Length: 410
Image (tube, rainbow, N blue to C red; front, side):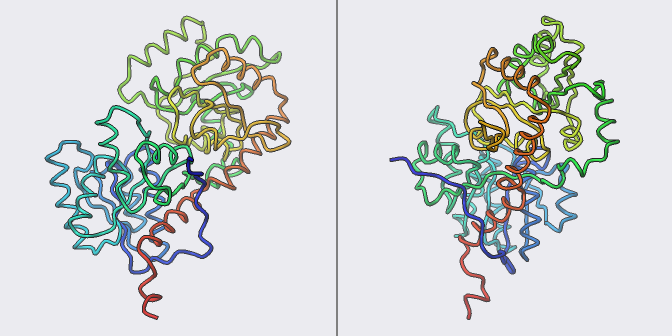
């Protein structure tokens, strides 16, 4: 019988990490969920009295971490070169010894191998977070990814991810800790966004003050389903209420996938959507982007382990539509708005179904959409806060380390 994976309980008391040192290892410190979580957890470690170390090859978040009081150790841990990975093992082992590290916490596969062997070499505690997709095949990838399950604990970002870790890697249920990702709900609250930022964002996108804006926040890649969304979006404006101008805004980097972007623009031309679709590129002020929008869509064609964007959208009081698979099934409540519905789930890759969902969205009464958005805000504030993620993660650290030295000596 499959294990029933539920979100880890919040600690009843504040975690005290005084005298403890936690080393997080992440490839880079640029844009991404693992990177953002590294910063958030570092801040929490320091607030709990501990020492936060981060080994990485660097990036734009270095200054932010340093300002928080974390110590950054620059290593080429993003490399997948076996020779460099083996050398990193020695560097990490020295860091563990020199800084008297209590736990080494790996957040990606390549640095996880170096971290795992460094921990074995120093007889220290190794753990990980399984941020990405759990692959069932090929066998070589399953083995490569298995390093994330070889420690004292592995954090899964959803029950869906936890069940796959147990199934694919044969990990005992008690080693898997389900800790959903969180967001800064205060930062995303509508009443904390100055209207001037909203106006500026809409002006930047070239959309009108009264336009109904559907936002698709994701890097531009086939697995995020932007092509499916464009097929679905064709004809939606004609089915919207009279006088409503519907606009679709894509925010996200191509990350070098220029051919895919060109294909999307071809679809815009094919359906004559030039006046309705905006490719806004990489967005650095997502709080303003959400506040400048009326709804958020996540049409991923590959199952998402979690999907932070829909949590942020709900925190921003926006109704959401997402693919009916993976982590989205846990983070979005469907059904009646009066019973807590925060959005809709749609079959992934089904353009016809997505078209109907978009038509339903724009034709839903404004007060009902507002209620759906408020339900989402409640959902995010109750289950998916940055504070909850950090508290649960620190609780795992404390469980692995054992009692505080002062408490143990009494």
